Each structure stands twice: as structure tokens, then as C-alpha cells.
Image 1 (cartoon, rainbow, N blue to C red):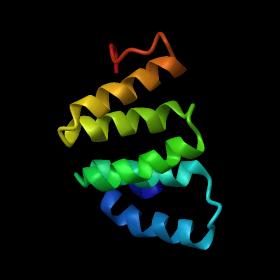
Image 2 (image 1 turned 90 degrees about the horizontal axis):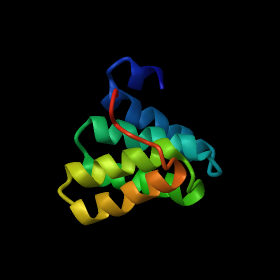
Image 3 (image 1 turned 135 degrees about the horizontal axis):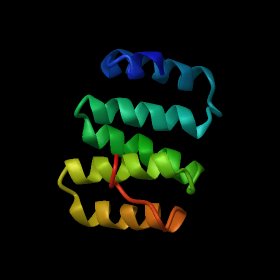
Image 4 (image 1 turned 120 degrees about the vertical axis):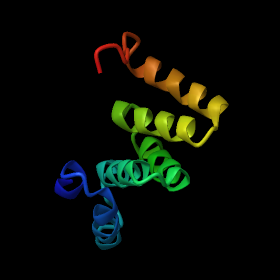
Length: 100
């Protein structure tokens, strides 16, 4: 996470992948963070794959659902982005990007 927050998401990818490999029951946070690193690196299909894994394990994870929505939108998969955005609103009906 330090690499991701430090603006070095590409460097974080192999580190997170190793953590997942070492812990086959890794928490969804590992998958979400890997998805975010792929998203920040412009690797949208990989981001979708990892964020979907995170949301499958933890469907009410708002941040993972937001990352998945962004990855779908940035990859031009608008219908899937809208469907995932509805999940965001299911979790938090008052969610808004205003002020973000």
C-alpha cells in the first residue's frame, strides 16, 4: 500500500501478487489493492478481474465496487459500469461524487 499511495502502483503489483501467492486465503483488501494498482497503471482488464474477485468475496465493499465501476467505465464497458454503479448505490444510497 505504501507503494500505491506513494504514486508507484506498477511497483506495487508484484509485491501484492506475492502476498496473495503466500496467503491463498488473502483478504479481499489484497485483491482490491491489486485492482487499484492495475487501474492506476491503465491496465483496466486486469483491474476488472481483481476488483471482481474482491467484490465476490465482499459484495458490500464500497471501495472495491467503486474501483470496479471506474475500471469498467475507463475500458468503455458502459453497461457494466452502470450495473456496478447501482451496486454502489445499493451499499450507500446517498453516495455522490460531489466534493470528491
